[in-house]
Amino acid sequence: MFQNFELEIFIIILLLLIIISMVPLIELKYHSDLYENIDAFNKYCLNNDIKLINELHVKDTYMWNMSQYMLDANNLSNFFNKKDDIATGDYIELDRNVSKKLIGNIIFDNIMKIYNYYLYMSLGFFIFLTVFFLYQVYILITINANKDLKICIADTNTIEIEVCFRYYIYILFVYVALLIIFFSLILKKLTELYADTDAYKYLMLMKEFDVILKENKPTNTNITNIIKKYSKSKINDISYTTINNSEVITELLDEYNKNKDKIYDNNNDYKITLLNIEFLDYYNSEDAKKKIKNKVDEIFRFIYVYILFIIVPLYILSISLQGNYVYLLCVIIVLIVFSTSVYNIYNILQN
Image (cartoon, rainbow, N blue to C red; front, top):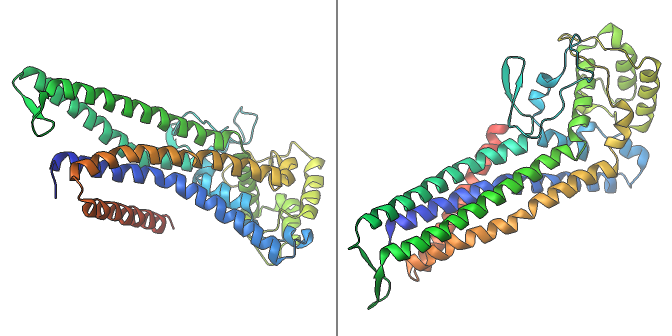
């Protein structure tokens, strides 16, 4: 079966790590399409009636679901400014250049969840590839130290292994360099998903409403009463409200405009002023949704480049196996099954 066991094991591991690195991009596209289809089904089931659509729970909207998926919702409260902070905004602006954020004396994960997810899922792949490349350089150095080494290329022809291996190292270096450039481009596109869309601003505003609603302070009843007035049932969670309703937005804006400088009471002294409430209607518009959808589509196109990078190790593996394609097929099936299992286990643990 195996002609060069070490090389083939290296390539199999490399293929597995490449597939694992692809998972966040596939998952991102899957969720975007899923929530877009849910939106389409909601419109179909409600006969595209704007009034009925506006009465959908927040949790049933594309913007809410994608924002929750893209951002670390459980970590949002750490990004609120305090009442006595000198900062003018309600919360810390999104920093697209770091995966960790120092807030006070504590380091938190940046809330760009998909960015972090892709970074961590690809880390093993790049560490492995770097170690593999350095190992090959070590072999070349060893060959240079022993000029008598030869390698048989065909049945009768022989050449210096040093020459063959040097060109191999050049090609491998180009492959690794292209992969690093490609990886950097994807990370840049992922940061654009956050910087060039309104997901963060929208979710922070919704988090402010959520805090006001759950704590239900007497001084905030002017806001909570409006939200509850249009809810179908008694609620204490923003995701079950119909705050996307145009009538609710109008009343909330009227109340907000009475005192724009008001800081709403809360248990943790967060600086909650309902910043950006005037954009709430826009955040649920088709334009805001298209920003996210277009960015997701841009990122997902890199999958085709991933396929090109997979072809190289697959080609080498097929040559090494010398026509034993049954074994190659089994390897591919095992990789797919393993990757799918890891993906499903991750989702189960997340829930």
